[in-house]
Length: 501
Image (cartoon, rainbow, N blue to C red; front, side):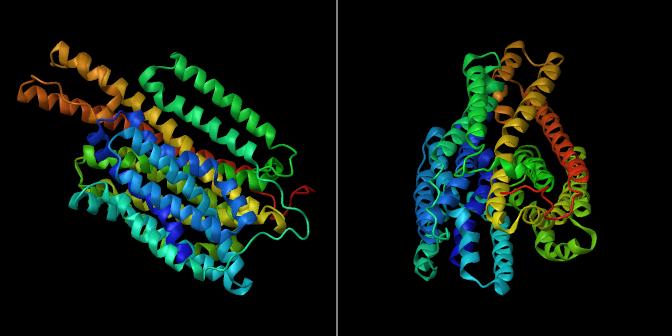
């Protein structure tokens, strides 16, 4: 129970904040880049430090590391709720990410160490199911809390959950990695520092490029510095026994294919889930609670049918299920792009949700199986950790790249439409100046009622253009992942071409 609640803190918080983004942008008058960092600061540290967090648990005790993570996460949640500026909120979210990097890897490790092999699968299945339920209910609860009181309550909700975990913690047996008499490998502090710095610089450059321009020295030099640090990180991981991400794993075609699909499909999913609340709340005028409930059918499909899909793996293989799932998910993104905002939820939104849900249901269990069966048994732990880190890095990078797509589509459409609008020149210039705030840009003062309606329609049309571009990009990513699976995931399980890890 404690591991489910503790892990759910991180999973639920990652989903609940998306519904609050339009409200946070309006309250703090934040630009697109500023509000993006509310998500990215958390994702950056949780992704870059995830493997290091797992190593800390293996060395110093998984229960101890789990508790450190929960307490740090709770303190950061209180700081988020108390934030009075976007900068304070971003900083507190970064600390939340560090806490998540400590607690997430310990959940499955504690379960694996606490249960005998014949009961382990059921325990992990229960953990997966309930953490998925908490992640799904997060946006619904968050939307309701925002409507009832304030966005601050979505962060304060973490405090009683964390307290329950801390009270239950003494029942968790302590465990550490067994090194069979050998000294434990040193923590890869160099790798963690290089990875965090590299992705921070790259994501910062990507997020502020629409506002400052690619020729701005701050953007250009940060991007180049980030690429250089990333190259240094990859070099540091080559041939080192203590490397946090052994590059030798990627010489296994099946492992490479599984992680490539993870990166492309989960990146598309996270990016779509980041953009969609803005569309639902600002364009379709959904209340936050209703926007949070939009994807419940997707979670229901995964919760009900994932086990049944897993039973099909021995009969038809992972490759077929993964390629079909990624193709269906891509079709779901296209359905979102083509949805008519004049239609209701059932006709406009539900078809995309069901297609995406069917696709992800076909992917989740086979993807885990493909990762685990692609490496020798003594490497399954690090293989799982690398795949988990890949899914989080995918979300980190995709939000930045798809935000660029959204901003470009919005700015281009707005510029064209303003060119032949009937608004005064001063109003047109002001709207172009505020384009970095996307649909949250203020309507210029001094306009007549008809002119205000025209300005609002221009913002709606511009955002819808950018939203559709994002969804088509997500579909392309999913379909490229499906093709990669068909090409690379053909070798039988555990065939590693003589590779020794």
